[in-house]
Amino acid sequence: MAEQQVLDEETILRMVQAWPRDQQVHLARRILDPGLATLDPQTGRPYVASAELRGIGLGNRPAPSDEEIERWRLEKHGA
Image (cartoon, rainbow, N blue to C red; front, side, top):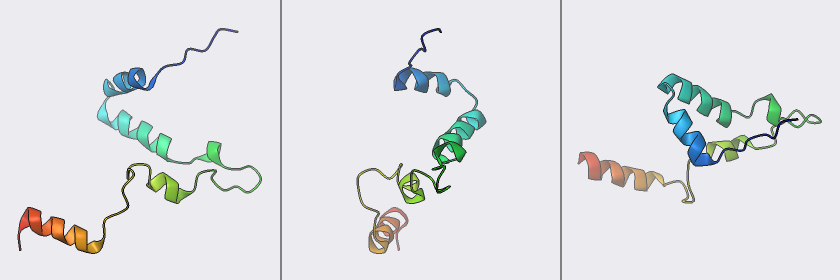
């Protein structure tokens, strides 16, 4: 059997950046969608909770409060 080539993240990113935008979005959706491959066969539930999937892009900071969002809005757009 041929040895499987392992690509690093930067190599993959460069390859994907050359794709059309709609193909990039499709790949991102496939990555973020738990799909059948990540379902526990015994329970039928995702191995990764949907809350964890939603939090992937949030970073390490907690979600802003309503007051913080309102302050940002006022700073950007005024009263």
